[in-house]
Image (cartoon, rainbow, N blue to C red; front, side, top):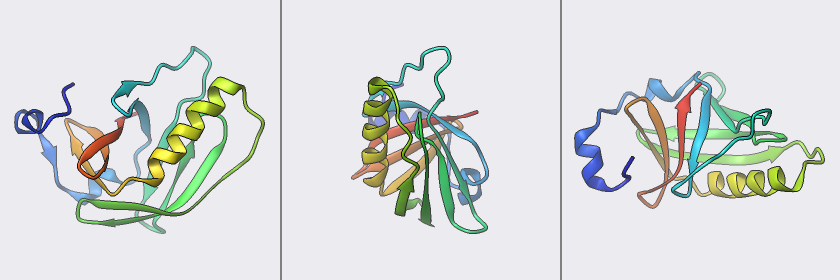
Length: 130
């Protein structure tokens, strides 16, 4: 999928804030590259709940958690933390890249039922519903 602004005109953008909540989102693109999971890998996931502004999921090896601050299409993750289990080096690198990227997120859109997380109007993380 092309991430340029012309692609948005051809797709269905959901503006309803409720669509982001209480879904298990699975990461499939990061920094414009497809995330390739091995057969038995734990996938990187994100769940955001409205009730307590919680965000968290699997970062591939560990669990992470944060406060999600959402106002219209703006999204910030605050007070991020994670477990610290030993991980294979390839998973650790993917996890570190993901946790760094999610910390920079400032907005989101849901397009064709995929969740796009942006930094300065550039999609850096793209998730699909589980």
